[in-house]
Length: 381
Image 1 (cartoon, rainbow, N blue to C red):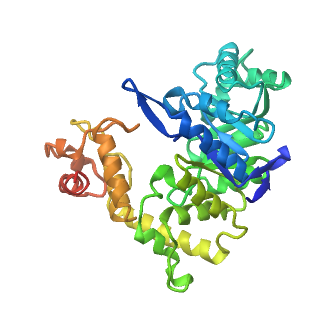
Image 2 (image 1 turned 30 degrees about the vertical axis):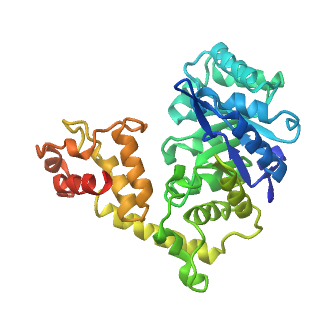
Image 3 (image 1 turned 90 degrees about the horizontal axis):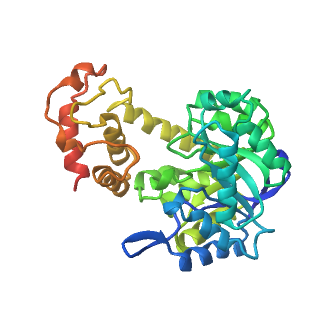
């Protein structure tokens, strides 16, 4: 396993982190629960292999991830760094502390190494500053008491709002989305690293999107590897993230031993991609991104749809199929959306009544009605 110095914390962390968001699940009397008989040994096997960073959160895996992680950490607590998050629901410092205490109880531990302000925005962070006893002061108090070792934050806000949070000097590490399909935070990651923060990349395989087979993505390096592509799309995606020198940890959600073994083998390499290979991939992905914009730029001017169709999101899924060759994933994402399981709520494309309101508002004058028909015909199979 390759290890890196985690920013100014000085901690030596494994390049591969175990994300406990997708632990193996089972049903018990019709209720989904973590299959601890599989999940706990899986995490402990990762620890034995050298993975020394595990990340969880109170709401993961039907709110049962923290408890499973706590059991896996038995006999490993002093060897593995633990990360979890505070879902800040209000501005009250006492309530922030109660959520921390609840996580400590679930994890059955006395302290958390890296405790994240979960999914904060610049607006929310600025709103906490100056409060008499808000989340920021509560975090400092918890650190003084030894309940948390380092104050961290995870981020999903617009890329342009990231640097002021770093410049506050309040945080020691950051968790941010980064992968081949989403490089919007590439500059921010370099900035955070330059300011001494430890940097963790979440979603290195795009939340599963880049784990699905895609000959188009696997073949990006064909002309640079003796005519051979990589063994899997996931390998390409993970190597791409690990090759970024500003990233300390690539956090991967692993649900079985095969995923663990594959990711471990990739993360254990000292060399991932050359500068030339990285530049080539970025160039090809930018060309694909430009091609995707020929179909829809995601401007959302077409909203709202009277039938509740999120047109831009449907076309994004379609672009994964058409532009990136992620056929299996695109169909699965469309199915999950139609079943109401996706975090984005939308009716499926078959609900279009051809009223034409979207086409009237589209600045590109796209034939949206026909494209919705095409989307449903292909993705609903």
